[in-house]
Image 1 (cartoon, rainbow, N blue to C red):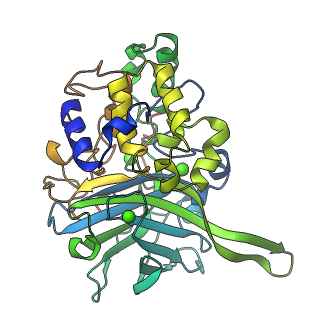
Image 2 (image 1 turned 30 degrees about the vertical axis):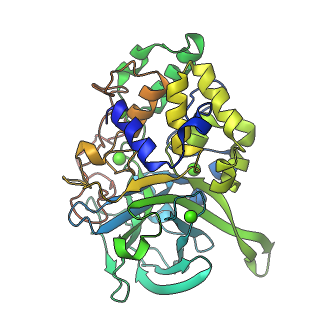
Length: 421
Ligand SMILES: [Ca+2]
Ligand SMILES: [Ca+2]
Ligand SMILES: [Ca+2]
Ligand SMILES: [Ca+2]
């Protein structure tokens, strides 16, 4: 999407952003951070708690029927196909929270929470428990099976999609291809070069064009929700951020195993791609994940983000754009539900591209890198490849949940493992 278009979009979506916001930035690369991805391994605690580590979040209109909104959270990145039975299931003590903001501020108004029963055996489906809350009031719930992972065949099990008859909500949970694509190593080098030469950098580091995520799987939970259920006082403007939550206290004993107690506390969160990975300094990354979007809007992380962007030589105008996205009204993906989404693989028309929500096929890192680097790759941006990884390694599907089936162990005689590191 063009930078100018983005600016227009931002000012439309983010109420009262500009004046107060200039001076914040969102995306800085490099100076202090070892950013890894959109949100894979974004902070020390979740890097060592992989089941709870959000990889990415997405929201967009269903291109097959724009009266439905798609929400996706992926977590636990980098599952090797051969380990998909050992690793490709849902832990039962984790709460996946889809936080929906529909009044135009930084505070979620509605939450859809998903938890899972224990898996009883390899190749067994798990029961998913889906609960909808408006404020703190439970308004609906239903259950659905997960899609089972298998590491024994070259063909993946087909996706199991459940539609709840009472609410009309569609649900999917299972292992999938990781829909994110991006050359992490090249981007790290580019940020280093921006620090050396602020505002310019060395774009030739992107020549290698390798997708760090190619060939790996991720755990995915996806919802297809009627627009009429989630529309609030902000009308056509919707916000979405994803959370993973664990109990406040965990007790381990030799006789009883693990027991959780207390309310859920968020251990990871995500809205706009790359905020915690790129712009928050390492010592505050865990704190950011425990934090809230209302804290973002109160400026708790503002000076850190601005410092990161300043070190990259990002212009004041572009710092303002990024601040409007992730600081002014919190680190929340914003979707204008009146902008039609059309095309294959979850949608591909330019008008509906990130940062108007985020579709699985949107090249978000190209967009963000180009804003940080002051449109050096083109304005409108990007006019050409930035990191030379410009699409997923697998073709996205044309119906819910739109992600691709998981990578499987290769059949006899197929030696290419598909990874691109
Ligand atoms: Ca994460
Ligand atoms: Ca709100
Ligand atoms: Ca992929
Ligand atoms: Ca790209």
